[in-house]
Length: 276
Ligand SMILES: NC(=O)c1ccc[n+]([C@@H]2O[C@H](COP(=O)([O-])OP(=O)(O)OC[C@H]3O[C@@H](n4cnc5c(N)ncnc54)[C@H](O)[C@@H]3O)[C@@H](O)[C@H]2O)c1
Image (cartoon, rainbow, N blue to C red; front, side, top):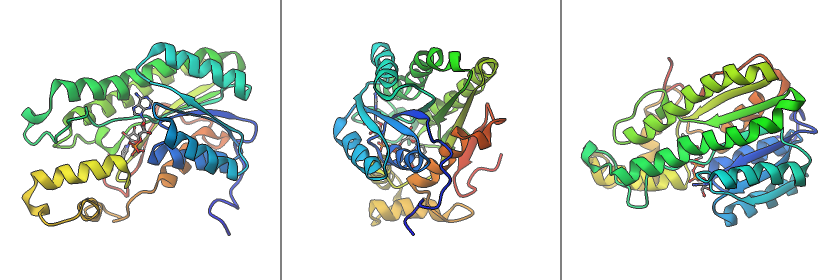
């Protein structure tokens, strides 16, 4: 049986806007929401990956459209919400997934002095301001129907500050506290706001990160980027890397009626690495 073929279609009739939909995790989230019956607006700053996601979810039978969006631009965020409503017939679920780990010349913060102001600013612009801008744009679209779901992709690093990526850890912690604050306000309109905190997913982001770790930590000498990644995975209780679909299924659950009384939470999907 194909992966997901037997799953409930809990999101039939719902429309979701997913940012970073052309990236590794964004595609996994899109596939899981499509399998559960949602229509999808697939937004990304880079269209090529988002187009590939569109083809994959259409093959699963989902209605989908691709939108170009820079989450750091308020006008782009407002236009994405407007186009989703016009082209897809509504907006029920927002998944803020777009994220970065620094600027174009990012090196790991080992020592901290290697984190530049450009890394700090680029990370906060996308990971924090982008989430704020899209939530602000999307809420008025959800409020009249007294139903909505906002799911922000944070990180294990936002629950347990990681050396070498302090700027990223801080940005993802900010996402969790923003999620809690907005959850209280949005609750009166029947809208839940939750975060999902992935652990280790092999993706273009991790490929870049693994090479940087290898250059800075001598015990990782001689390993390929994938071996560096596997080394970190082996240090978690379950010893399993997460897949984009592991994250996607957590998002689908939070988007469904099964999670109707869950709000303001930050769900770790990390093989038990963080337990507080
Ligand atoms: N990969 C991991 O191990 C991991 C772990 C924890 C959390 N995360 C988080 O999961 C999310 C997805 O990560 P990923 O691993 O799929 O990374 P990725 O680099 O594969 O995907 C990120 C996507 O975001 C898009 N993006 C970047 N800046 C944007 C902007 N300004 N506007 C719109 N889109 C933009 C990129 O084009 C890309 O398609 C991120 O928020 C990341 O921080 C990843």
